[in-house]
Image: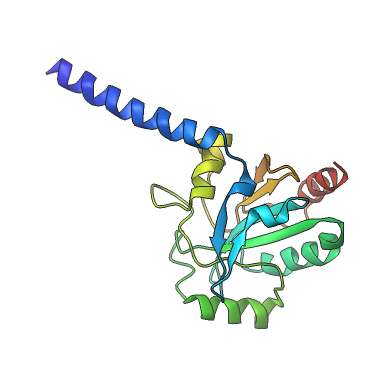
Length: 185
């Protein structure tokens, strides 16, 4: 019986190591997402000289008002190389139940969002988009989204710099300082 459990443990450990090794050689700019409203792909490699702020979003969340602040950040820093990318997700409290078209309309008409938005994706667990699985492998379990409006800051060279909890507002000093530091690099 002990041998059986040891074998299962070794198989699980081998699978985990293979997954970690697959992600170890990647950087954020090797991932892509489907676009929210078109058949285009948001290929992060197209932002090779840009700093990225990747945020999982939701339209019916207590943090939804952060769309306004994210748009302000994008408008203020996009000419310096910041790209905000919204990733709608229904993972937390089913707070993004709409279709891609409904999400796009909501963001545009309520918050004037012009930054790139992806299709709706899962951002947690085994079904998470590969970017989110990679981010977790880079920064550890505690860095994975626990709610809507979790933010990842990515350097110009595709390295995951750090994450910010949903409670970190787009106009917070810590987020702005981190963005400005990366833009100067």
